[in-house]
Amino acid sequence: MERYRRASQILLRYVSCETRSLSKRPCGSSIAGQSRIQEQFIREYNTKLRNVLPHSMPRVCTRTVQGSRIFCLDRPCGIQGRSYSSAATYAQRNPSYSTLNSSDITYFRSILGDKNVVQDEDRLSAANTDWMRKYKGSSQLLLLPKTTEEVSKILFYCNSRRLAVVPQGGNTGLVGGSVPVFNEVIINMASMDKIISLDKVNGILTCEAGCILENLNNYLTSEGFIMPLDLGAKGSCQIGGNVSTNAGGLRFIRYGSLHGNILGLEVVLANGTVLDMLGTLRKDNTGYDLKHLFIGSEGSLGIVTKVSILTPAKLLSTNLAFLACNDYLSCQKLLFEAKRELGEVLSAFEFMDSHAIDLVLGHLEGLRNPLPTSSYKFYVLIETTGSDESYDKAKLEAFLLHSMECALVSDGVIAQDISQASTFWRIREGISEASVKLGAVYKYDLSLPVEKLYDIVEEMSQRLGDVAKVVGYGHLGDGNLHLNILTAEYSDDILAKIEPFVYEWTSMHRGSISAEHGLGLMKADKIHYSKSSETVQLMASIKKLLDPNCILNPYKVLPQSVL
Image 1 (cartoon, rainbow, N blue to C red):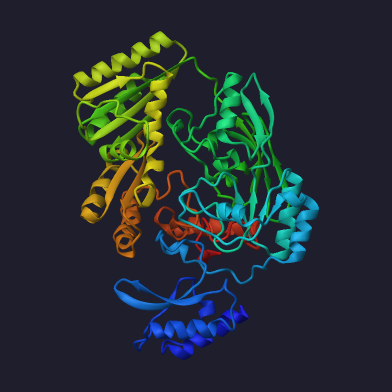
Image 2: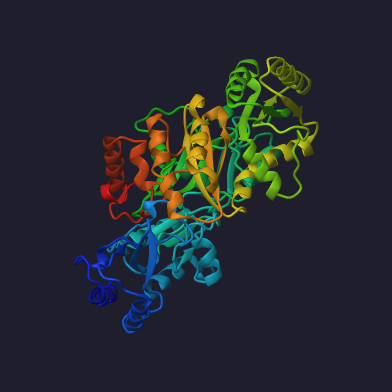
């Protein structure tokens, strides 16, 4: 910090500006010079800087923001330069946090063993970077605990030292919640991947937090059950991360949220206290149901180490239809009819606009349009699951026929085998993967009234014009829109047209700015668009109570101004 202040003083000698300490400004913030200072200044300044700062410390640079040339310290700030996700990313490192030293490393090795204390640059680089390569931290340490006791010892020590930590699962999040912002210690749960028990009468699974979702589903399938949630990232995401973000996914319309399926949790608090709430009872009205505090808290209140979850029986019959609609109103009416006519067997209702389909077919290999004869504006994927194959299929076929007679559906096909069904799902699940292949992508996860859900896509498309392609898809049965805005590269100008408009529009229509992805770093300071000030203050009070030193996943979920 002292060296950074000295660097600031050097800069202030060169630039006539408001008198302020750079050490107190948010990372990436700027000082606008009143006089014209050319690139020669940059070279002279950085030459002087080398005498007081190591290579890892900031250098002065120039940037163009909203048409103005500014000077700023190019300081690590937890987000790669090509990304402009929101003002929340310009976080200021909390000076109360300690810096890692050799004694810390020695302690962690004493409780975890050498191989579970990772300082290898390549492994750290992967753990520091999110799935979209949009957010990048600078952590120098990755810890891999194998037991709850080890997690407890880590947190007790980190809390006493005021070392900030980031709990990490499969690192498949989209809002910067699972990677460091600065140099926080990463606690990855991948080594805690044991299945503890399965109650084969009631379908209650108990497992450790590091279990991969797809592995759990495969295990359950062999036992006659399934997981109540299904995600495109199921091959990488971990159940602990799913719980911590309250992941929704493709089966939400049938089985609901994790708040309804999680029966118990084991959680380690910031001070190392282990909360044993790992019950398996369907009914328990003894006091406050504290597990719900940790479902969706994104690791900011405690680290989930074990989970007990109610899993539904695997039904014998699964049918899948890929349908085309000419307009969004038809999609809405189709959803209403599907709920009424398919009722108890309806397990998924997904929609995609034509841009989403074109994106997948154009950038993922081995896929083709199941309805190639014509081009349609919207596509719908309907899945049913039941216990009678012939009855369920006949019911879906009758629904499809009725929908075509009523002109709700323009064309459609029912999957004839598992391979075809997998292809249909691959199209839907591949949209997110395909979007990152085009260049830059701004992703928004919104919850809106179904009748208004696609309006924001059309308005955003008109707002941006030819500079971006706007894609809309998501879980129509849940009122959850995934709004993707694709451009050749990230740009401040484009971001200024997107935000805060997208949040204001959502708030005006009484929606949520985060349906299932969480707030993370990207939207921590945007929570007021969906929650009242009183609610946010109460959340902050809970955070301060459970984590008074704020070491757990700092800069995420809540605005720093309330902590």
